[in-house]
Structure formats: structure tokens, C-alpha cells
Length: 283
Image (cartoon, rainbow, N blue to C red; front, side):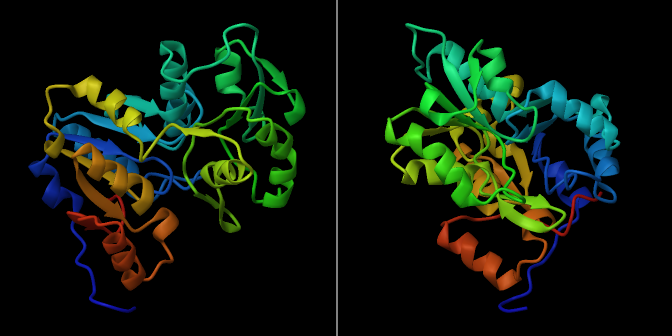
């Protein structure tokens, strides 16, 4: 390791300082397939304090889908107040007109995500299309970059980007965990769309709308009294800082193999202060 060795806090020692908790999902509680050892017990322990626990997650899928997955991984629905997803927030922004969509026709939507995920398109009543040259809207909600090359994504998106078709990215994460390691996530694909000339609206961490949606559920809790726990400097830590909450960086997930000196440099480059470092989400 390089640089100073960081001191890791224990969750049980710091939880009493806060009145609510915003938990990231992937990389903190589970790896997409399995819950991390001790994570379910840690969520239960936080809930046992009588303080609200919310999952705030960059998932293009609805809350119900994520709640079912958490339940399969041993996270009881009774242990948290709500699951606030970037997909649900995007739907609300579209319905409220904060994200402007064509109003003169039924929208033809190209969705790039994991198999079977056309959540935003379906809920807005769009017509799903497979070809970018037929799309009025592009939704990037997930990634299959573990077996689809980024150049292939570029070629598929290019006809829409060249026509100025708007894009909504409902998962701004740039990296994701897979059994093969870290690969580009939906946010990285959306960056390529922007590089091709398309205009992208990102919904999710680190952007403010998802934090506002979560905070509305616990409006009486002051922001500095909320602890946001995540594994991403660019999304979880930067988003929490802009929101005005306290931050705990977990050393699982996308940072599991990252040198402490590199982490310290990246935190400093972002101009962030991370109040707590956790080896993992364990009580």
C-alpha cells in the first residue's frame, strides 16, 4: 500500500451519531449475486436503532424489483423504510415535465439495459424499438459490457445521436461488478452517446433529484444527520457531499482492489472530505 494507512471505523461505533441512513445497494450490501457477509445483520442492527434506513440506488428498475432482490439476499423488507431507485425518480421527472418529452406522438423508445428491462419505456407507454434510426428517445438503464463491446454500443447508438435524439440515463454508474471483474456500466455507455453528439439527462447519484426524493420521505431529518454509505467516490461520496449529508466509504464493491493511496488521491482530487471509512458493511 502507498500513503498513510486509513483508519477503519466500525458501524456500531458511529451509527449513534446519525438520525437516518441512506444505503447504496450494489457493492455495499451485495455484489449482484450474493449478500456480503454480515451485511443483512448490519441493516437489521441499523433498523433496530429505531432510525429510518433507506436504500438509495442507481437502478433503472422499480423499487419493487429491487425490494424482491434484497429479500432473496436476506435483507428483510421490514428492516428499511423505502427503496428509492433512479428508475422511479426518472419516471416521476418525466411525468412532472422536468424531463421534456415529445408530446405530439407516441414516443418510440430504444432501451439499452440488461435483458428484459424496458421499465421506463413501458411505464411511460412508449413503443419499444430496436433500431436507433427509428427512436424518438434513447434510455440507457443498464449495461451488458461484460459481453458486448463498447464499440458495438457506439455503432448501435450512432444513428440516434447523430439526429439529436434525447437520451435518459437512469443509472449513472460508470463501472459495475461482474464475475469477470469491473466493466463499463450504463453511465459509461451514456458518456459514449454524449461523445457521439447526443444530449444525455442523467438521473441518479450523484445528481440531486434522487437525494431530494429520498429526503422527502424523512423531511424532518436534517441533512448533516443523515449518513450516506456507499462504495463509489464519484457517485456516493460526491452525491452525498452535494446533498449536505455525512459520508461513509465502504471498501467493498468497486474499490475492493484499489490501493488506499489511490483512494486518498481520488478523494482529494474531488475536493471531498469522507467522515468515515468502513472495511465492509458489518455491525
